[in-house]
Length: 285
Image (tube, rainbow, N blue to C red):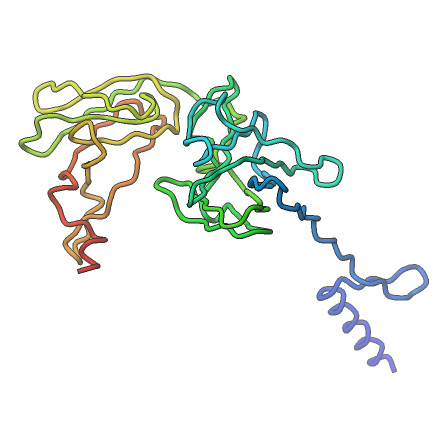
């Protein structure tokens, strides 16, 4: 009988570990505590044919969140953007919505949080593909160019959860600013080199040639991005030794460079993209 008691006690311990059973003072077993699933809005499509996008932002929110997309020509002017509003603060805390008209055949757009001074920055758009969860509607989510996702809306309503902002940065934290100097050693025969990035509003800036090096200095925030190109055009760009795939004898396209705590950046360009075989093209042949 004693062995039977030990066996039953051990069995109950195992059951506690597996399903969370517990005994109250009367000796009976309580059922496991089940946390109810969070309520998700189920909005109806606007009667006037507008699009309705409802999003819960789990990343930091301390400034206005704006809608930027095909409906407003991807404008960077906050006055021409549409602001997200609280959806139903009492029943759905943390959820926001935006409603807009869009007659484009392919409807695209994304939320972007303004900086604390009310200005616009692509740095604070929503995050990559893994940051999004679609809870309702038909949305195509594809990887963007540099740590963000591109969203295409195939239905008039969409309900989504955004886990974090681009590169998991917080718009609510002050970002250090530095004076940066970028020095570029370009391929032989390069007559010009341009730098383009957040510091210039993504306008092309010609770098100054000093001896064999092209250089440019500017003030900018940590985390901002830039790119090196041979002309004032997106038709060509730099590739680097780290982008070379020796197995297939081709180059992968380089992503944007990101500013950090190091303020003097010495960059060697292996070649220009137009002069090499791109790995995507090599695999298609």
